[in-house]
Image (cartoon, rainbow over all chains, first blue to last red; front, side, top):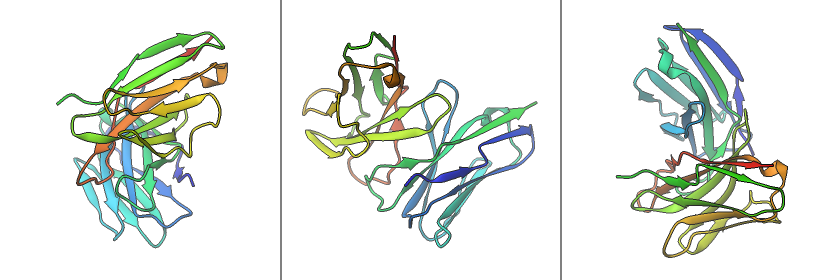
Length: 111
Length: 115
């Protein structure tokens, strides 16, 4: 089952914060976050494993609420380079199991 | 350490022709995944392969599409008798053979246009 991302799109000014949500109807083992810039390959940001771990990457962090089957990606003090489409990918078993991606959230950061 | 290499980057085919997309995973990776992406849409899983084995092809259309990952050489996604609806970006990703955390490394994609 494809995870659901919200919002579909966000427009920010440089320095503002944003939260992107990812929810699943199935119990999850892990949530992965990727960023894709237009015309480029998706790039890995972070993995969150069940247990509610919060991981960080530069000024981007994320949480995973196992009970609610939800993950949130937090972008603080956004930079122009953060623009792109953010995808969450989910696994129910982990390891080399395929990732099922949401439809993405398009983030635009303006000067 | 070279990343995931895909070729061709762009491919134009007429309806009814065949398209072959190649993917060489990162060194030390033996898991290959193919995803399809339509404009303004997400990455849709197609197939997961290990060397000489198809592990999960639940996302592959039943007809015209096939994939392989031979013992030697790149993984190949083959689309026979292409139709306009096959126009998309096809991304290949690989993951590690051991200590696999599930992180995928994506290639730059192959963009197929069917005329």
